Amino acid sequence: MNVVVAIPARDEGNGISRTLTALAAQTYSRPFEVLVLANNCQDDTAVQARAVARRQASFRLRVLEVTLPPEQANVVGARRLALETGAHMAGQEGIVVSTDADSEADPDWLGALIAPLEQGWAASAGRIQLRRAERYALPRPLRSVYLLDTGYRQVAAQLRHRVACLSEPALTHWQHFGANLALTVRAYRAVGGLPEVSCLEDMALVAALARADLPLCHTHAARVYTSARLSGRVPVGLSTQLGEWRSGPGGWRVPGGPELVAAAQAERLTRELYGTDMTLAQSAALRRAWRLQRDDTVTLDFPTSGLALEALQAARDQAGYWAAEFPPVPVRQALQEVCEALANYGGQGFRTR
Image (cartoon, rainbow, N blue to C red):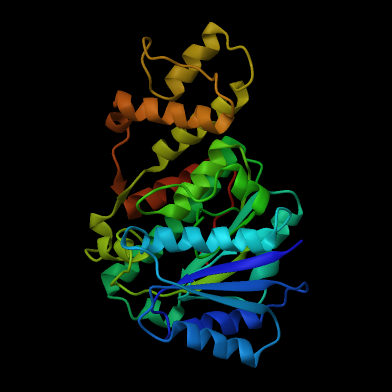
């Protein structure tokens, strides 16, 4: 099974060496390739990448220097070309792995990220954390929200897992982003590759996998550490999130415990009823779960359960009753609510490390 790590890089001459040096230190026992897509660079990204390749023998490096046209000269266009090229290099039975040029992987990252795919999962996503020194250098209010939000997202993922009865390992997490993502080439081709979007291309790819009922495993064992730069290179990304947190915990509002429980219950019921002939009572229960009215159309007649869930979520948002019942709450309050809800479902705490 061929494995290719695809890295889009634009003017990353100062950081690409650290990224590739971390890949050279991987404990993964099988051969793998690394593709650096140096796109529209005005610096020595390609030179620095080739210099690392000459100093190590852990992987075979291909540096592809390209100048994308203006409409494609962005992270979406670069990641699409990197993944397409990586998938071609890996072959139909291979695996394509995505990471970023400002991120460094733990030594056991690649093996841990690929392990779920070897067990039959279509895709896997690992944890992404800010580099320790850069995290501590953040302004205090911003760092406080980062830590609170990380804890909240982790407990929320655990709660969804328990309430919705998901098939993932019990210790799941919430991140599925381009800095730490792997999928089989078959799965990548099955969803048509990276979707045509203007931003958040990694989330769009994961959503496409969900619509196709192609399972993604969130694993804590695969970790990368990324830059905490506040001046981003994409319209919407981590730097955008960090900017929104500058005002401190009081200004950051998220879904509270009751909303997350209701969403997971609705998801579970939908999956249980999918593929069956719903009775009138079950149809009414599904409407109640999604906060829909009697005259709202409820159907599970879709090719996949993922498409059914997406349709019901859209109907929920359009109806407006859900948002009226569940307004967002400050992140500190949400964390407390979700911890209490998790305890009610037999949870034993959470990990943010």
